[in-house]
Length: 200
Image (cartoon, rainbow, N blue to C red; front, side):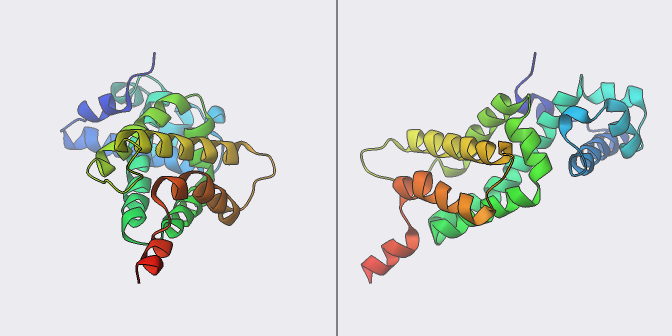
């Protein structure tokens, strides 16, 4: 049974050697995901790339899905930290485009996160982190509870990106950004450039 992504973080070791091993395993998985899909990776390949022993892996993670969950927590944090602030400070389309370009540039990793066996857990973590980042923002329509806006916006973004990465003939990042912005972002918070122009 999969554990919540945050469980791995709470159990983070404090011994320097254990920290190095864990970082090496995370980096190895990220590097391997740029080469092949998650389903085709083995724990032996991950440990070989990390330069750690096979038994060392199991001191940190029960299986490769748990390692993926750990990596997902950090990657989601990076993605949201890059895009969420821009939504409220600049053109919301610019933020949407940045998100899509980042995902396209790391498509193997995000395909594993969004369309693989851990997708439901990753989706839940995506929403959890987004909630913590935008909990004080009240920029949506008055009729919409802000938490519902976050859940809908983040969940819909996750679903659209997952659909995109699951397509055989993928649209480019600009096309997906346009779809995502028109379908999800603009209805929730509007386009900041348009709002500023109307106010002048």
